[in-house]
Image 1: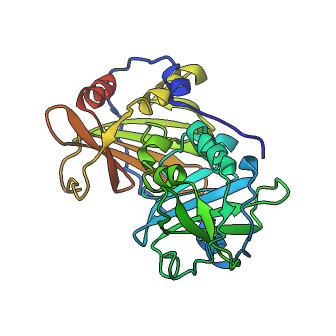
Image 2: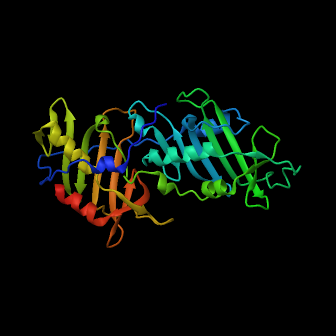
Image 3: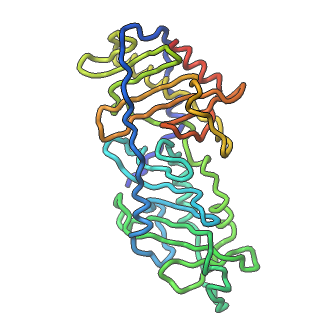
Length: 325
């Protein structure tokens, strides 16, 4: 697998285009086709055989799942899809979902750090129970491929136990009866991981090649875009491809500001500040709806297909709405 990296700077480099007006012709709103996300890493964790030695090639990692206190805190996996570009093959399933785009540069740095870790065998004769490894609630699973192919063929399952008295931790690998010593700095980094640092600060990345039409609405105002046999159409008027594409990029130009505080959300009965619906050109791919809801004087809640994880700058949302209405 050749590494592909996309950063927010790439998207910020696109030009913006000002628009005015709203849909004037009679138009019937489309129904969204939103499908539930599924992730192969769920099956990998259950079905793949154990790798019993800590020998890792960073380029051969196809997934990581971190559990702390018995709960998944970060899970990301390499799951190619025909409708996506290679840089968008990585999927975040915990704590977000596939609408979130990983920052692959940061992700690959994490993999390099994991590959650089060295486990040493404990020679004290301590038992698994004494080392706190019998019922540990801290685990790391790595899906690995042995030949560089896209699909993993083994799973390294690392359990972390109690501190060894010198700042490091006891650890074990599934399938092995050996107690290891795991560097304390690595334990702190893994179980103190901040998933927000591993995503691009864009609400969703929707490839224009997969989209047949778009509805942009604010209250009872509607603006539409479409591409098909009739060419490129915006607000009921045929336009050039470049104009359509520049406008499309503008729709994805509101960036994530910060995470929405835990257990906070906005009712979907609330009138959104702006609603954007991307309708796909195939039934095999889920449509996408981005809604921006009022939050406070500086922020708006971002909702993607009903999932609310992040806040955007309110001014950015208002500026985008002003481009169309």
